[in-house]
Length: 445
Image (cartoon, rainbow, N blue to C red):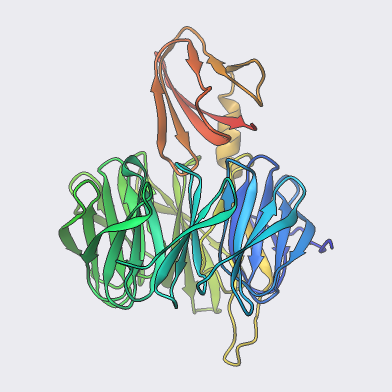
C-alpha cells in the first residue's frame, strides 16, 4: 500500500511533511537500503519511506504497535513491539520490507534498545517490571531479567566501554545497571523520584539522569556505578538528553530552556531560553547542531523546532511546523542530512489528531560540505565495500565516528584499514596540515 505525499517547501529548513499512519511515535533509519521506518501507534502500521525521495513506498500492518522501532545494523532487520492477547517482538527484513518473524515476549512490552556490541535487543517492560533480552542473530528470547529491576522500567542507555545497560525505573526512583555480557543486574542505584531522561557521555564515562518532578540532574560514574553528584537544573525535565561530542557538552530540555552541562566540570554553563515548553533535544553530528522541539501557545498553538549552534550555544533559527505533537525522539538520515520528526497527539476524547512526519534538511551545511569537497578519499576495493581508506599525503591523523558520535577508531597514515568496522554509516574526521575535513563512510556489508 502506497500513501500519497505532498511536497511543501515552508522555509530553508522544513523541506516537507510526509503523510503516514495515525499518530507516528517512533522513527528509525536503515542506512543499507536508505529507508526510514515510521511506527504509527494508532494506525496499527509501519510506514516505509524512501529516504532519497521522501515518498512512502510501502505500509506494513502490525497489531497495536507501540514503544520504539529500532534498527539492527548487523543483519539489516527492524524490530518493534506488537501488543495483542500476548505481546511479541515483530521482526522485519529490511531488504524485502516484510515481517519475517514474531518473537513471543512473555511480558507486556515497552521501549526497545539495540546493543550493537553483542547484537542484543532489550525490551523494557514497564507494566511487568522486568526486562526481556533477545538475540539479534538468532531472533530468539535469551532471558527475562527480573531480579534488580524496579517498579516501572521505562528507558535505558548503553555505556559502550563497559558493555552495560542503564535502565531507569520511573516509579521507585532507581537505576538498574545490567551487564550485557551476562544479562543480569549487577547494581541498583537509588536516584530521585520519577526519572524521565537518561543519557551517556562516553568521553567522561558518566550517565546523566533527569527527573519529571524534581529540578535536578544526577550524574553516575559508569566505571564504578556510583552516584557522584547532583546538579540543580532549576526545572523538571522529561525529554531526551543529547550529547555534543565535539565540545563535550550535555543538553537537557527543562521547561522553557535547554540547560547545557560541561562534560569536563559537570556544572551548568548555559541556559538557552525558548518561548514555549521544551520536549525533545536531538544532536546532529553532521552539522554540529542541537534540534529542540517545543510548544508555543501564542499567536497559535503549534510545535516549533529551535536550532542551536553548539559552538556558540546560540539559537540560530526557529522552524514553525504548523502542527502539534513533536513530543517523540527524532532520527537522522545522514546521506541528505535530513532529520525526521514524528507528530503524535490525541485530543481530550482520545482521538488521534495527526499522521505526519516533518522533514528538516540543512541545505546550508550540505552546500558548505560540497564546496570543500576538493579533498578526496579513495576507497579500496570500492566505495560501498571498503577495506581501506587511501588518503592524501598531507593527512596527519584520522578519527572515525558512528552516527551517535561515538569514536570508533583513531589512526595515522595514508592507508587506513576499516575491515573491522561493521555495516553502517560513519563520519571520518580528517586532520591535515591545513584544515579539518569531515566525510561520510558507508559500509553495506
